[in-house]
Length: 373
Image (tube, rainbow, N blue to C red; front, side, top):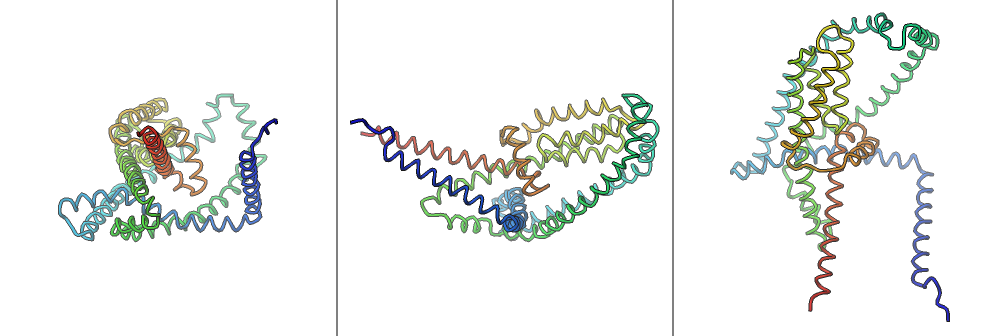
């Protein structure tokens, strides 16, 4: 008798998978019908996740200092926490106290001294230096004036920008207002909270959960501390180099290098654009080519010297994964998603590697058990 090509077990498995696929499509179609509801749910989740995530990431930076004080005999926890918290707030205050006036002063000088000359250059001298000739420049300007494309773009852009900022400002202000409270509560009961989280997990998985949590804290904490130090070092080096080459507003441009370095791969490019544009238009100071060379050299040192020295626990995440993370988390959480895309990608990588190690360990134990006499 001829055997059937598909066994009953295989047929049952195929039917089960088809049922799961159909059910999945049904759930997706049903969710689409309640799009506004899910948007409301997502907004509520985002409002909770942002301050909690900020507190968690901040705790990973600060908590090792508290543990260090406790190892030195400085305790109890409330006392060591107060010392570290006061020092942290003090450093932030001192940085803002000294840096803010310098940056504001350079911005005021720019609008007082250079901005009028830049406007004059765009309206007058740019025609003579236009790469495609003055006639084409006149045609472009005439088209812009006839269609009011700039004014229309401004009229559309400004309201949307105000709406976006107003929608983003309140969650950010709420998150930063809650951050000190959440951070103090989290740091004070760091071990207790970790124990409570582990108690939710079934006993047979508790050991693995503790190991995974330890790996996450170690990897992400090391990355955040290294990234913070890298921002300070790069910003200081860029400020010094910009001053040495005679770039005006060197402090602001150097500060921009340090701040934007928090965005992987794109940060140095974003920071290089303003000084290059400025030196292209400015009548004095270094040329744009020299500024471009300086930023390329800074990028080289950042990737080959500063990162290996400072980021001793490098993540070794592929650039494509980082870029995808920036796009994904940026669309979910806005600017904060872009800033924290790398540590979140690192967390996902740690989780993947952890379960991959578990699977390999289980396979190894199964092979050892099968070979046992």
